Amino acid sequence: MRREEVAQLAFISTEYYTRLEQARGPRPSREVLAGLTRALRLSDAERAHLHYLAGAPPAPPPGPSREVRPSILDLLRRLPHAAALVLSAAYEVIAHNDLAAALLEDFSALPRHERNFLRRTFLDSSAGERQWYSRSGMEIFGRTAARHLRAAAARYPDDPEVAALVKDLLAGSAEFARLWAAYDMSVEPAPHKTFRHPLIGPITLNCDVLDIADRDQRVVIYTADPGSPAEGALRLLSVIGTQRLDVPG
Image 1 (cartoon, rainbow, N blue to C red):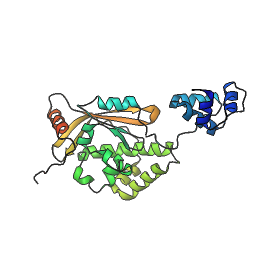
Image 2: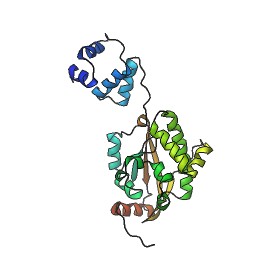
Image 3: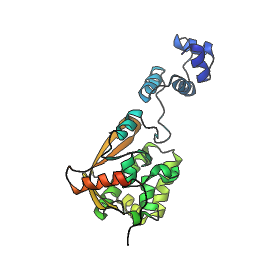
Image 4: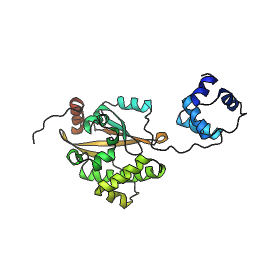
């Protein structure tokens, strides 16, 4: 890009941008650095490096990132036999593949406010009907989620959405309020989770979580052991998809 184009996109003068390039200008403000970051389409790491070079360490992000890297989106597409989704630091489902939609629900069909995994689990009136997790699995998930959400609230103290999520969960779910008050900081591995699917019945799957540290996100991948009943159940779900069928009571 030419200097004039960068300056225009950053909302600064070409002369000022030239002086910055030549280290002749005054120390740029955070606003100027933010404009240059957008204009040059810098990555998070490049943005941080620019701020440190300018002597102005980057301010913490105002809230959890909702932007999923293209490589992660491609990973989800390359896992046709696994249910995979991406969670923000506040447990918002920000990406998922088709099998995850069939196993849980099609989050893309929901308004953004309702795509939060914690809201759907603890606050949605139909959560009891879905019964995503077995009872024991729900307890482990709840303790882990409370711990993660507490950490997210500390990292993003000025984010209104995180604050509203905590407030709504504490006011609307006695179960979550109990888990939050317990202040359980222990790390409890949950390599398997049992889902209660309304059409297929119980499905026990392996659960692996990949941390995307630079985006403060998690990729959750559910897989079945080869040759297990769960593998057959996932294959059936891949055919059924998200269609709603009448199931005899």
